[in-house]
Image 1: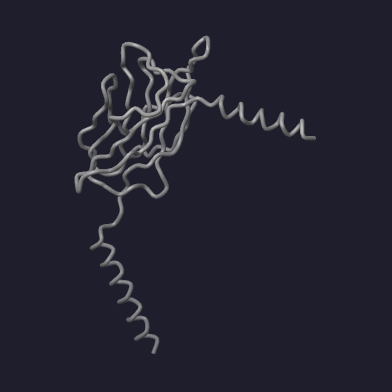
Image 2: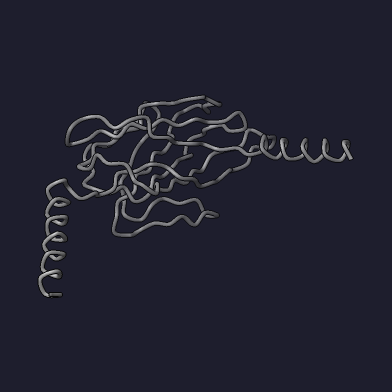
Length: 184
């Protein structure tokens, strides 16, 4: 029995190592309006970035200002995100998406953190449920093959301003008082 459990555990661990991906993550949000959203990506040991590889962050709320990509990358903003063929992310066609595309002249191997992906946005609050990203990269296996995936990421979302929240609260209190008066 112990041998069987060891084999199952080894199989699960090797499956975990077989996953290859590019993973973007929110580093921080700076400013007091407009806000700068700073992201980084990690490229795991089974991946290599070649010209044309990309990742897209979907449904970025607010008004997007300047978008900046690190050297060797380009950026674009569009309503319908650039999506890998085998992925089907949730994408609201009325909300902007941001795509960062690698256009470097030489392949870029694994990296624990590649920074410099950012954009300016009118919103500074982080999504409660999280946004979505997709990526298209190249596995370093021989022969090299395309790799695609999807995941969750934090994006700007609209939240009520404190004044609006206060007015809503005041209206609810007023309705409660009115209800008590009419109940008598």
